[in-house]
Image 1 (cartoon, one colour):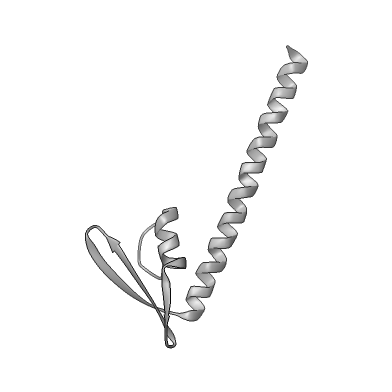
Image 2 (cartoon, helix red, strand yellow):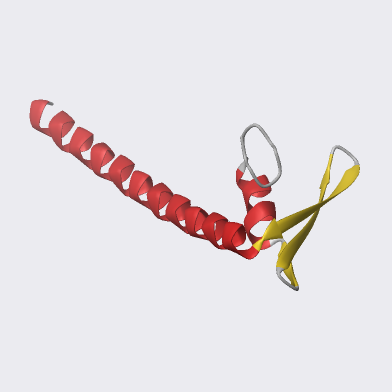
Amino acid sequence: QCYLCGQPEHTEESLSLCAAGISAFGDTQVANGKEEGKTKTLYIRQAEVAEVRKETENYGKAKGLLRQAAQINLELFKMRRARHG
């Protein structure tokens, strides 16, 4: 469960709402987002925002690595298939 907005699990879009849809407001961060027809305002400490942004970057890097690994597996499969006819 996200400790910023309380959602049980984030989709890529809702994670970006938490991470990037946040504007500075003094010592607190404010995020506005629509969920099921309601507008939610979240008040978030800057340290929490920085942590979410870092995790979002890590997620992007991991996603890229998984994509590369899938491509390598595909190439290995093609090579094995070509070798064994």
